[in-house]
Structure formats: structure tokens, C-alpha cells
Image 1 (cartoon, rainbow, N blue to C red):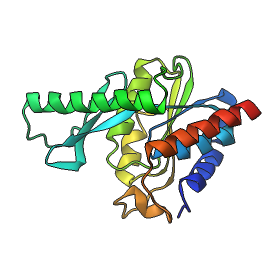
Image 2 (cartoon, rainbow, N blue to C red):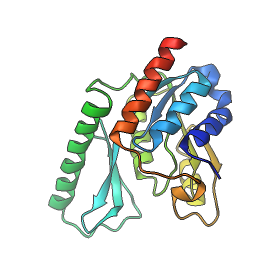
Image 3 (spheres, helix red, strand yellow):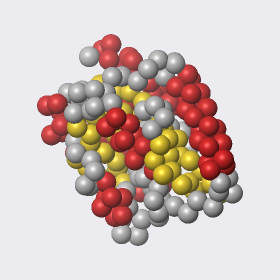
Length: 213
């Protein structure tokens, strides 16, 4: 069990120590991944930024989804998902989520572009992998932007996700993979929703941390 995302991030950063020599770029998927990513970047003395991705939710079940889209327009459609919708409905959902991505870039990153990815060792961080769609989209975006290597790093993921990401990432670090995995929250004693305001506080902490390095 992790006490909270901060605890998970510290422990994940320690597990990622072998990647320190590459001076990696840690990209966190907000909102939940922001606090984990901050701690990873702090432990590794790495660069840190947010990569904005959004799940493509079913209109009749928003908690579930059939894929995800990254901020550069890279889309991932889950091959295991049933999609009982027309292409017009799918396009409408993509447009809706792209608008939310633009809002998050404006609010959470101040409208600036993401830190350049090309040629970097990128560590993609979230607070866990449930279905894996947003991590797939983030990974594909990093490939499109010519990252030298892409490491997927999370405190928890189900056994299926471990098998799924192992062959497509250049490295995979998962601290916990319960055989009875059903939700990311199950390995956190203190689980809470993360607001835009909390993410902005984390990014301000990062700014101050960089100035003090």
C-alpha cells in the first residue's frame, strides 16, 4: 500500500534510479499523475512537464472508454473495446475531448508548448494504469515526436497492462501488480480527486524547486 501519491512517487523515483544517467524528461499525465511525476522528477533530478491526454468516454458510460487522444491529435482506439456508435458520434466525442485538452493546456501549462521530446529519454508517469488507453496515447505521441526511449512508470497496474506495455515501451517500471486488480485506488490508503488548482500548486512547487537546484 502507498500512503498517497507523494509516497508512491518517491518510491517510484527510487525504482527509476538507473535512468538518472540519461537526464530524463518526466512527463506526467494529469491530473492524477502530476503529484507522482513531480516526486519522480525530484528524486531523479530530471526535467518535468505535463503531457495532456484524454480518455474517449462512452456517452452512455462516461467512467469507461473506447480509447484516448493525446494533445498532438494522436488517437488510440482500444482494440478490445466495443464501439456501438456511428463514426459521427465518435468524431463528436473526439472533438469534445480535444477541446478539454486545449483547456487543460491553457490552464495547467499556461498555454505553452510541451517541453521538446525529440532525442530525450522520456519517463511517462501516471498514478496507475487501469484500462491503459491514455498511456497508450501518450506513448504513441512520444514516438511520433522522436523520443530516444520511452519508459512507462506507474505505482500500480494490472497484470494484463504489464503484459501489454512490456513489449511496446523501452522500459516498464510497475511497483505493484495485484492479481485481483480492479482499480488504481485500491493500493492507496489516502485516495482523493485531484483538481486543476492542485495541479497548478504542484507546478508552482516545481518552479520553486528548479530555482533552488
